[in-house]
Structure formats: C-alpha cells, structure tokens
Length: 178
Image 1: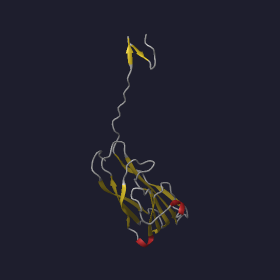
Image 2: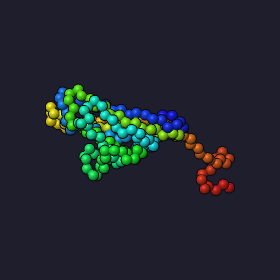
Image 3: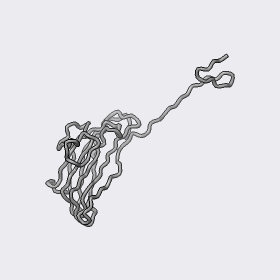
C-alpha cells in the first residue's frame, strides 16, 4: 500500500472447501479482521459486513465481536453479535455452518477501507482458522490460514551520533578537558 495516498476501498475474500472424503459438520470459521489491534497498526475499518455464497444461507450464521481474543463459543464472554456496531472497533468474526458435503465450498467476503495519509511501517493482517468435525473419522479437526495482509513497507531510518574530538582523541560524555 502506498504512503500518503487517499483512502481506498478493498474487498477481502476467503474460501473454505471441504476437501475431505466425506461430509463435515459443526464447521466454524473463526477469524480476525485487519482492523487495529495488538498486531495491526493501520486504522482500517469494515465497510461491508460478511456475505457468504456457495452454501444454503439457512445453514450459515455470521457473528462479530469487538474482542480480539475470542473462541468459537457463543458465550457472553466473547460478546458475539449478529451485526457490526462499530466498524473501526470490530476485531473478530465467526461463521458457523451446520454441515458441508464433500467438495462443497463456502466463499465469504467483506469490505474494508484502507485509510488515507498512511505513513511507513504501518500494517494490517487478517487470519482465520476452520474447525470442523470429520464424520468419517469422528475427530475434530483444525486448519489455520496463512496470515494475509497489507503493509506500507519499511521506511528509512536515520541514526546520528555526535562526538567531540580534541587533539585526535574522542572526548567521553562529561569528561574534563584540560
């Protein structure tokens, strides 16, 4: 992302495909938005809530939380809501799917605004993980995505030092010169 430019609208897409040999159930996609948090320094905001495609909407539910460290548990502690209340404060999302047949895929997308006037050394990353029950083995499985994001790049760094030299010798700080 270029520094010092005007604000920019982007769409973020994620795909979840059941590549297993059988149906999977209790699918949870738990993700972090690329909004400002302990890792992200860029003040992005969510401009469009998550839309899903590929799976019957009656089998899919989307939740949002302003908490950064959440679990897929629908408890008061995680503060899950079905709408975004503050587009700059929302940190996490949860997409639940009852079941996915073998080969079935879910596409989820949302809009973000990258702010104007960015400086060097700013970054925004999103991550997600998929948890599901494999009906063939009966095991709960977990797959983590690669961290995806944008950065303004590393800016130039200037380091300066000032030393005093008397008669070819460096004078130490607070030293007496005779």
